Image (cartoon, rainbow, N blue to C red):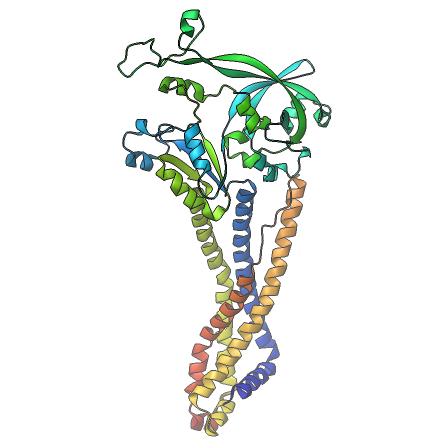
Length: 462
């Protein structure tokens, strides 16, 4: 039997029992719609999480710390490192070496210190953090009131919205363009003989244990300084999604300005106890040109003897979570399709009983068992195909309703709308193929039963 004749005969047979075959097709479409809606929801949630991380500027960033610090944070790495007290420190030479690595666009320190903003005779405390110029790409600045820094060393400040309301509860927006005064502590190095001059000093001691007044001794003093700044902008959300040290600030300056002001940091005491007197950092953030090269840059920095962390490390667990979530959503979505499979089997078995004479005539005039099987497979495949198309349309409508309902809910809670349901193109094709395959599997038993009918017996008793 030719393929065209087989298709024509299958369509004619389906038209003879429109109601029963139609209901079976609708049952398939409900199963496909359930599967598509569930899997698309999982895809949407995964892409939502990915967008939030990507918008936070974390995917192209590597965080670098010294193995001398944060011991116990990564026990596996600690066990691999012998004598972590001798590991290299994050200083200017190390920062310069990272700057010259391939694919690295910038290397900036994480600076976060306590400061005061003086405005209108009132003093307001808050953490001062430094932001690189690349932070402008962060989603927190999409709704920036005012403008971003004009330059990496500009004497300008951006305030967190809550802090701006604390300074001016009535009209915080009016702070934009005004001049405020920043009070901070400046780190000033002491000369080796400063102790004799009566100035306070933090001194390093040799490993022998006795105090020494040799040239290796050093120290620093913290001197209160002030700096005039122009308020250029106000942001309502913490940058980088609050997932970085510099995020948890209320006063944001260009990072080059914070280094120029030589602000006293929490790491200064630690640097003094180590000896050497050089400038060191607690954390460096390395910006990579291409997120796909993050792992390569991370390996290069690890070989330099430093500890690294990137969002790729965290997303391994995130991807595992969404894989399991997609699996469970697919299982629950397939339950309706399993019920539809039973409906296909029932429909085709009834067709076998009703069309015994027709099958007998076909076999009597030369149709083989294979032709009969192909006929029933064609009917099952046709129901699966049309049920798949209808199911995708129904699933798409369900998904749009989910997005609209979610948008209304988020709007009522004064949150931006987010698409939590996304139908990827690959899922459309996969759903149709899956529907056809399931339908063909469901037609195995009815097709085999029809093929085994004896034409003599069917014609004799019909």
